[in-house]
Length: 302
Image (cartoon, rainbow, N blue to C red; front, side, top):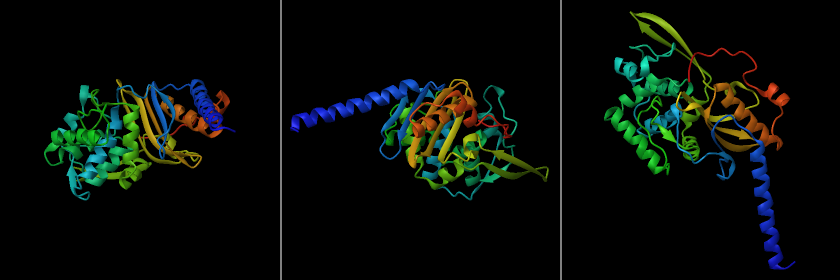
């Protein structure tokens, strides 16, 4: 076979491969309006949907909060007390979750980081930023500087919690952040933790608080999740980023602006099934794979 024919054959194989991938993408229908799936090792794109579009990212913001907090190398055992400032700054439109950390609660910086990543506790994330050298303003500046350093050119942060609409990014940028955040052992451990209990004191009386993960997929035996973060505000919709293992391959999944927490979880289930089986799941498949087909009790969180 001549070199010319070999080149033609090679080009044909590439075309057929790209066509097959495009065909698969056409068949995979997701509720999330913005999505990206990549091989974490090679960064090859396996699926994308509006992956270059800038979008509000809600509490996915807290991944960068954790990165900046750990980069600062502040004492993780230092005690930090939740203050009125933490409450006021995270009570936009008077929205308060029923399981928020009470004023006066004293935790280590590591415990605050744990709750911010696992249970998306806004007061915990804000307290971490408030106690950063230079305060919240300097902390947010460090978040944006880190994004620039990582090449996340379409990303902008205005607060450390994700409560503000102006915390924005793209699925492409968030995939970069997920891969970088995976280098931090505490982010891996805390984000994939499923529960945590703590005791606070009010008028010297102990009060036990139980917190759970915001991602139901973590308790599913058929999922191997090495890092994750969920998010929700009205502008952003329901969001999810993960680094998971599919067929022994590390896969980054970014899902933004789904209609509900169930929809974003189902999108992830569809993607995993599609990668494992090379075809989209049927309605019957989804009925057995749906992580919301049984009642789970979790503390309120985003």
